Image (tube, rainbow, N blue to C red; front, side, top):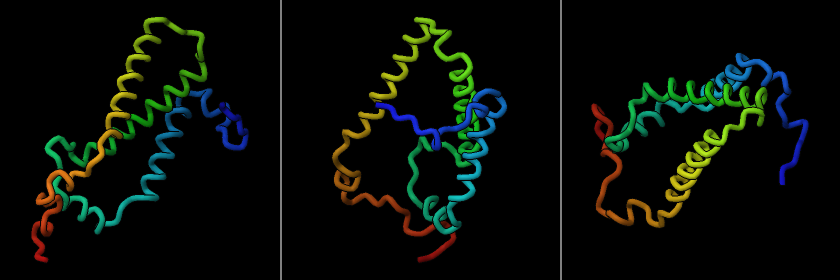
Length: 135
């Protein structure tokens, strides 16, 4: 059941113009990102952790999330202005397949019962000390 709460809903003007729809999530994401940005100490702790080989470089994080937030805003604009007027059966089928794949990936992650430490009790997941520092 969906409940409509007017006080928690964005005004229609936010979705009427593509520029506003794109810039609103980007600005909100940027503001929240600066508000909760980690301290130098926590950043050093994170970088001291053993990272997986497929981890993208930290410089990619900002541009990728900015692009994603912009695309989400544009999607909101398209959904608001076009709505269900352009339901193409092929597009709907493609979206259903994509949602199904994402749903399987999301639920597969929750099936893990053990922590990595249970599987490999002797594995050290944290380096002893960051480079250049002695503990």
